[in-house]
Image (cartoon, rainbow, N blue to C red; front, side, top):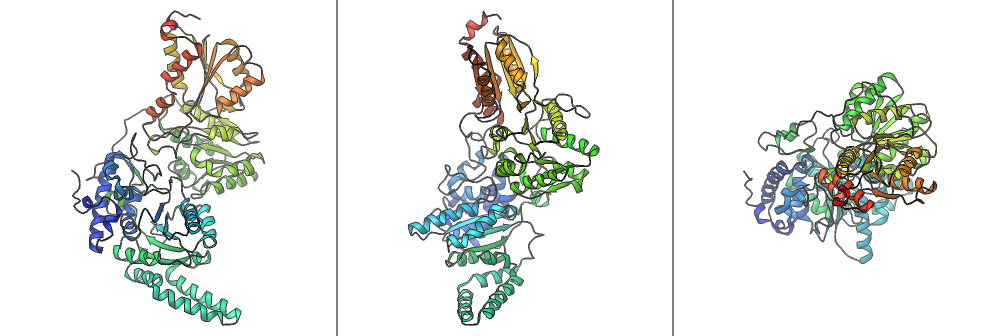
Length: 639
């Protein structure tokens, strides 16, 4: 049953909240929380983060004149309540569905989403850009960035804060601190102090004090400045942010509507230097199952609102690729004490929570800091360890400079486990692992593997462990394997060698990665049309199995490459090898199947691959078009 939301029903845009009393804002927050819970129960998605910022969301839209005032949510997975308040309530139950609302902020979706986000720690940098543009144009609108304490582990946030005071005097950063063990206790006194130090009276007194201090000898000026900052720091903990040039306010209870509204009103009126408002919230606030869950229901499947019980996925007999990676790595680490594992704030997502349970002293979670993770791994490798750096493909993009300079140029044996390769479904284009084949395969000396199934993944892990003279990487998708039998302890591949899976004579399909199963189905469909088809598993994008590629080119009319990646990847490498060896000079028909040259919106992964033409039917269409035959004509064609 839909929640009862009489006040929320009257809100079609944030402007409708600006005449509300504090009591009405509290009621609105309660109704907004109920609506968010009900919506996510039907769609799944990120729940805990949004529930933690309901009061903050209401207060921000009440105080600031959005969309004239710019409001940027870091990462964006906490923005579901924001979407409900900003005219998208009628579509909120399409979240993360095909053709529906994005699970993150998205510029094309609403004027209330001035900057799209889905990776951490971008908000302050983007906000500074808006501030500089505003100041250049002589406008007077406010700019607010909301960033979580987790994102503050990323260096980019501090780079932006370091630059802020030189860029503008009017910026508000909201530090949403939802880790209660970090912040000091909150309550009436801290809220009172926050209101006091952000108010005009205190600011005026502070400015008078500073003007008086300027008349003092220089040593006394510095002593007075530090005394004032450290005195406030003893109450607020804000000395560090003051040193970065921010005026620090907080911590305040992020669920106290009265305190939030008054502090935000004060912060909005500070124009002489950037302001950081430290807000302490509880992830999953107001929904008991989320509050009691270990991850605060960070990301959930569809669930029952009353019990919080999440819908169980369809049962399969195949383990997830992530679990296969982690299990194999644990087995190898039991034999080799030099193996260590690094994750960038994603221990459970990458499977390294399993490794950490077995080898806590050999597991390193560096926070949301992919650049640091890569160079940290390089340092480990340089001193004789065997680091496995497990980072989602889309997040490894953030550390690419370090992959090039700190790993590849020095030829250090860092092993990159690239989870979430290919399309990821509901998380959409920001989380799709589309580009790693091209950017990793471009690096001299890199070994790049694309296992075709879970057994092949186990062998790729073993191969990477055995490579000790250069960097290596292997990519694998989200989700379950295909159900093949797993070896007890996998044997390494022969470097740079693929395999023939099925022999034919007319069409050759060369697959890199987990499209092998669809390639085999395509071969069956082509055989039904009278076209004998070879299917090969490349295993490696670098070094290529050139001997295998030339054989396929020599013995078939058409060669089709298939990969779960963007153009400029495996197919391009194959074309270059064919051109270098003159294999394109004899009439060979070559087709390269990649992800389309667009950012595909979220949908079910199977449907996304159909759209991309990387399913069995899409491969068949490509083969028939390359041969210039129709379905009917193919029936009578025999190899």
